[in-house]
Image (cartoon, rainbow, N blue to C red; front, top):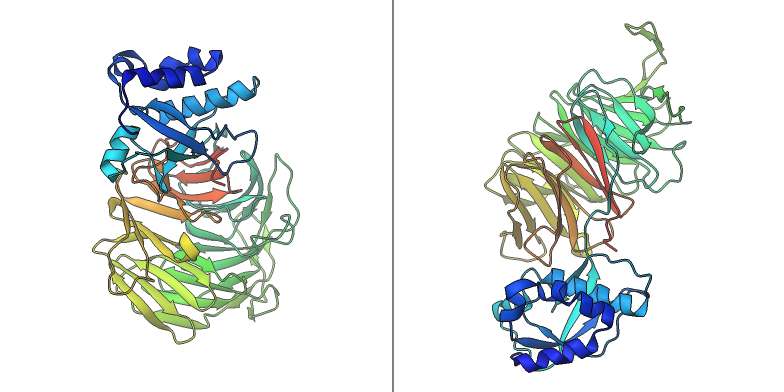
Length: 464
């Protein structure tokens, strides 16, 4: 039964081991609240986690005033009773598929759940970083990160260089060629093993895209400086965002000239128009001949700067713009099949979640919005998360989870979200200024960078 008398507390006390009884004050929340609470709820804890994370499935009676912290302490006590070497770790809890972010009693009343029978509570690992790596320093603002390959991280910087990092503080390559800030960086072969055969694309305020072959790594104390093998020209203003097809044979770019260009990616240095003469740079080094490529086609429709492009399927491109719109483009026809007016300048965009079909976007207010374009007749967001305090600069879905995404903001915060609750499940506060970009790395880490010129890695995040 949902409502119990004080005498039922004895049921829980008898169910606890001596070790658990010592932690009883922590479980109840301690102090006067534990004394005042006389309501009990009969529960059974279940999980999809593998041993040693499983607790006995027998039902027990617990105080209804427990929050997720008290529930987490209870689960740890039960696990410790079965394994004296168990080390406590945080857990989260789901009731009917929704994360509990208040006391059990408040949650049940808010959801209209009457626990006249045994209440089933699922527990999962809490989504919080277990470790913060030492920051990797740059010489200027870091405007772009890419964590799509588990072996290394890509960064783009306002000093005009792209960089490849094998680990925190370990830079193996410097991409040298742009004459303006690097605004976007993209791994064209994220599933390839190692760095030698990797192809990387970059975009810049110098109006160009460049393609790079990484090759052998440099030494730990002296990263290898490489130049691009192809320059893609065609935009008449700064290029803000780039994205590759899943097959990595094409790239699209969004620009301040309000257009989206589509480019063929041919890894041959001889493809395209060759630049036969060698160019001598200011420091005396000689550049090898490069080839230039032209756009295959141009998508026209946006009225202001295109801030973000995503290419999740070969036939479909998504774009976001300062003209307040998000568009979905049919690559074959060059026409937009969806045009959503969001009422705000849009800074960032990503596609993921359930069936890789949900649209996440952030812009010139503190709200992260999620749309489901599969639902006909409405363009209203299905989720709105409003915990940031300033513009949202970046958002990224987790590659393997339908529920989780990360956002970054000018408020200096990086937030981790789970669609099953309206509050962030974790807040990363390692930056000292505006955060300009964020991504997932290795499925259990978040990478982020910004105005403080740091690449920060927060690891040990148990999403899966």
